[in-house]
Image 1: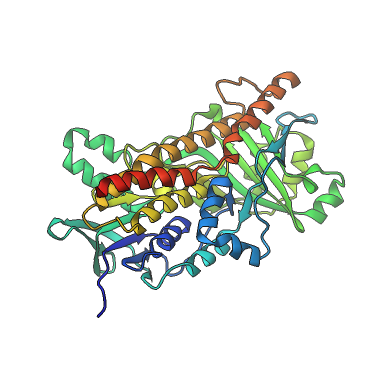
Image 2: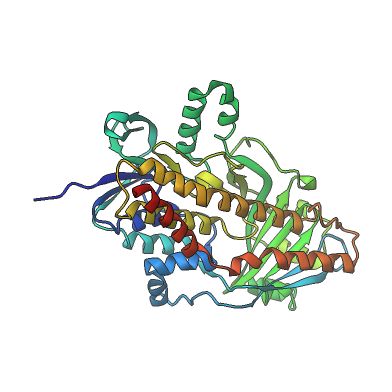
Length: 442
């Protein structure tokens, strides 16, 4: 006789966070899992995922370390590893290096499509993935401890909890905070303010140049042999050689590090003429300008959005995960890892034998209490790194006229900001969560 599942988990979004969550939950064959992906296929945009020590612990727990080895990915490296060189570049004359970065841990960079493929292979038979399913709204059926889910195509479904892993422009975050606003009119404005993501005040231009073309124009160009971060007032460039190309991302920010703070009109990703990038760096050092002048003619401009600190990431039987709860700037390369860590903790809680349909709301609170403060602190670290790179950090008042001694102090600050990434902690987080779950079950 077929046994009915203990409960059902619905996940909105088949990105890295949603698939990692489903993989962990589906370890328990008594739990039904369904993933709703709005797009007609599972796909990824953006840079690869940097796997630091905490995220590596999660991938090891899933057995993905072995899968990565089969695909010839080297594991992350314990101990100090040579990182990018930081260079002062925001002046018409030649710049200079002010910090040769020793990273405390050598992260692994995994292309998003490959990681998504490996995660899908980890889904159990108790997990379904449904494509072209866009959640329109939801309601509660308290008598059956269920969430009733309505889709834009007119179909419906139900589950015992709904997890929004649907990114920075999250529909589930919008529905959750709209419901809270209706339930608490005196604080409605505050809740509604958490719905739209905020423009960080920064654009990222993704560019590349042929290594041969750059070598022909400037044979000793430093970006051909080492990753560099070219720093200056309000802007910075991250470059790294990769095969026959040099890839680089040009960041242009609102002056003074004040951030955007609001809704941005127009498309969030758009191809632009390279002259738009050149104008932003017109007074920078000649070596950087040579690389920029040889870039692809129409780089893509990405508006970087963040989710300002939200007061909660769970409410009743609804939870937010990854970018939907704490989208952050890319200046420490940790956003994807935070989604993986969210999924690890929540997934193991929901797959636990002591998880029941009745205690799911309290399990979500355990997840929130451990993960939300940590992820928000991580987002703040990333934001502050961006201020350092663009000479806007309040504790390090440098500018285009600063001395080499002042820049050396800034370089030491850069090194200190990465120290936490060499530390683990996911295993300890799980022990804490399991202890709280055991108390629930007594």
